[in-house]
Image (tube, rainbow, N blue to C red; front, side, top):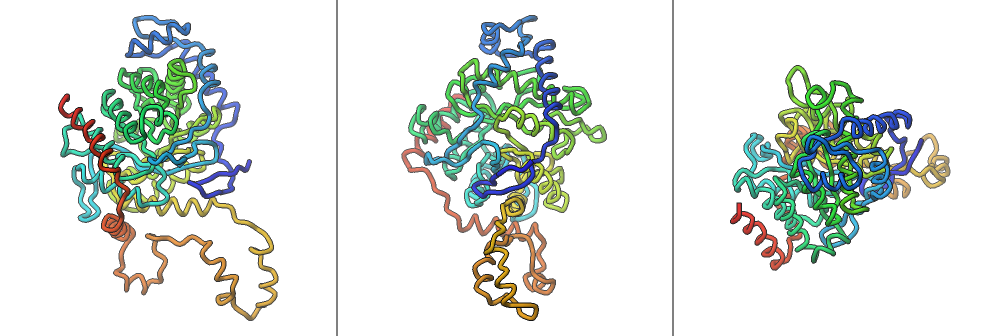
Length: 483
């Protein structure tokens, strides 16, 4: 089955990766419906419980809610199948629909491998500034996330500082994460200031909120508060239950995926009960088993990833994928291999938003040099999957006959016209051995680190006007005074 896809705005034709058959997707869907109707979920927010009770759900033991299949089917009929995210200036930027994918970094890493020294250290707010500046300059980065959790600001308001930096240092769409509910409210307030008001942000959203949920069966208060608040505001919510096989789900891929999906569908029902048509984005991962040798939850697993892709395609809903990341502790061959594998898997799997480029150490560390390597990989993937027209011009049969067996094509107008259509790397090495030696015999991590430094020294991100900067920072100061 072929389909027309795009990486950012570049068209591509390739076979669509389909991990599960439609019958298998239906089996997983039905299993999720049975979990919701028979086992139910625990909800730790009274407003969410009352919404479901009024809709006909059974509530027992205070907060254990059983959701009938009909409510899920109704929610699937009202949720948007396509979402447009705008840039800071109100221009359409990301089209979350089948056949489109966009890459971005992740959020909230505790550590950074400093590209200047190669050393791992705690992240600070300037690292957020540098990371967003770099993302603003990289053309194949479609959206931004905060990348680092700064250790040099008060922890309770770190999310406000992150949002301030993202609003200031790029015009690209933002996927934000907050520490608790009030941080979500403040992040939206800041975005509304920049957009020109609540209605303007609803009409042209340039932010979306990534919500981590305790498990597929236990939905914590702050996750539910954020979900309902965002639904009311018409801002896209990425609702992501955390499920680990062997801990919060059975140790099998289908069972883990069914528990994840049950949690996602519970969130979907709530969002549509709060406001029909509220934009909702599903995860493209989840349910992987605990690594029983290390007791670490794997970050770059191949195991259940394709199941989540297939379910998102089955529902025809926008998908939040995870790629460009690694379990490695440094910018090395494992990091490059896992980044490339996961980015290709997510692209072929149809994820519209692919985040965590540059992540190392299972999501604890980010490297800006690794992010640049991921950016290079994104260019490779885009070219590999882009369409190649086969016609009289590209076949050039008359030119082949004219030059003949004894000629060469280097100085022909056809070569001059077409050589730029090929992909030329910016960081990957293509010189011969002696050329590589003369250039300093630098390996990819060093070349990527130098690329980062050049960008930080030369790129000037489009800062907000001074009056908006003051208004946005006032929200940060207000939160700091309260907390």
